[in-house]
Amino acid sequence: MQNELLWLAMLLANFLLIIAAYKFFGKLGLIMWIPISVIVANIQVIQTIELFGLVATLGNIVYASSFLVTDILSENYGKQEAKKAVWIGFFSLIAMTLVMNLALVFKPLEGDEFAGTTHNALSTIFELMPRIAIASLTAYLISQRHDVWAYHFWRKRFSKDSQIWLRNNLSTMVSQFLDSAAFTLIAFYGVFEADMLWEIFITTYVLKWVVAAADTPFVYWSKIIFKNQRFVLK
Image (cartoon, rainbow, N blue to C red; front, side, top):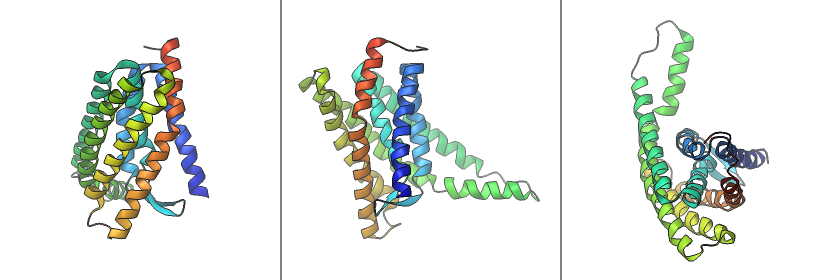
């Protein structure tokens, strides 16, 4: 149960950090979270774990939290601000992949054991990044652009504040499916056997679905913050 409890704790921590960023920094705080979530998720995703008796990858929570942010931006500031955040995340991932892979070209200081160990550790993480990054960029653009479009599609039909949970979940559930399918196929096809690939897809989508359902109260919380305008900085 240790992994499961840690997963739930990480879930709550991510949501509270987003709310804190929004409360203290306003819209800028939300936009700031997008590159954080994309970069951290693409580092965490290389680690597979057992969760609820199934094989899963880390990074699901922090990546799924980016959908919470774009939904809050869509709800409070409109489609264009949400789209801007999506492109900021896209650029951040490209920049990280390029800069870190350039860093790996450098040779560590000869005779410095610590430098060699550090270089090997960075290589272990970031040499996997190009394929992971391509998978993530593709899945990210498909799913996030769908999410922004779908949120406003459903908002026209369920426009009341009491119906935020409907437009939030209807847009995110489909977006998460598209994201999980695209990412799993591009990142892991040929790396894992078919059974393992299918299990990763199912667990990834189910876990993101849980995150999407769990983030609904925080969308309402963000609406209260927006209405009250209780920002330390704007």
